[in-house]
Length: 250
Length: 221
Image (cartoon, rainbow over all chains, first blue to last red; front, side, top):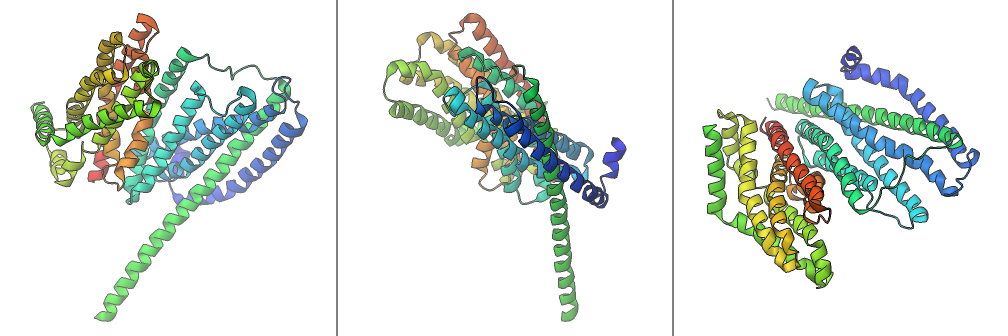
């Protein structure tokens, strides 16, 4: 593992490897997504209680799972940046933040669309909902902090610090929200046993969404590396032109 | 350790002699709390039920407004660079400055909270609990806030960004602060949330200065 991350520290090698992997991951995501959507919408039964709305779950659960996995990935990347100064860690953290925010938003959105027919309201201050909402705010904080700082190297380190602070606070938030909720209303049982006919589409969709995320994440990382190269080339070109101009003046 | 106390003493003295800072936070606290009944209607039963929540939220907002002065002034006049190169580790510098913020903002706000409770028809029995929980909870407000202040020190529109970063981190403090005061939960529920609030404060007192110092080091490079 260590050797793999060390070898990937070279951006050129990463570009080569990711260029080879990306088509496979993207194709896998597309195929599984198509299969999963078919299973979710046509090949799985409607719930005896929830009716057709149960199909929202096949989108909702993978998004919710990714919202947490992506934050873990950002925290891991931030740790890699601050401790090992891994050059790709920052690229990974930067590329993952908007994706994580998007999946968190989708989880909230699909959840609230499901909540309207099921609970009779779009939003409940339930423990789960509240802690995911706060996770969404943490993502927004990461994106906002990075965009507010001009110096890119300082921005990446400061964002990494914030991500690590967030990861220590997240369990406390989760725990506090759960605890606070039990005072007011019993929490909804999300973890009821799932029937096999629904478990398969859910599993396929979860894998498809994870592949989709990694495809987008790799692509975003490649874009970020290319953007940095272009920027470096521009700076070089400007410096070169200035030198030429200085020569000409002599 | 001597320079730690000297720095703490200096910051507290500065805040008191400047005057404006503490007064503004208290004034803001008063205004926000008195706006609430205007918005919600003067129903005393309703107000007494949500008094703890209003007081805690207004307290957080008032503290939030004063956070950016923890490092900003010292950064602008170069004091921070001197402190960073001085004998005191940067972690202790940030600890002293967070502590100073607590002494000059957290404690005054905590003392002010029960006075404003009168405006909201807060239950008399809740007064000592309110003072105790705000005193125990506000260190977390200052020490978490110092992280945000350090992170956003050099940004433009820093105030809004600071709010976006810090307010989600305040959620546990808010929840346990409120559940302690409005505990119809009985003495065990009260003790539990009070102890957890104390635990949160202690954790942030340890971790806050480390994170804030790490952020300052990035800025001062």
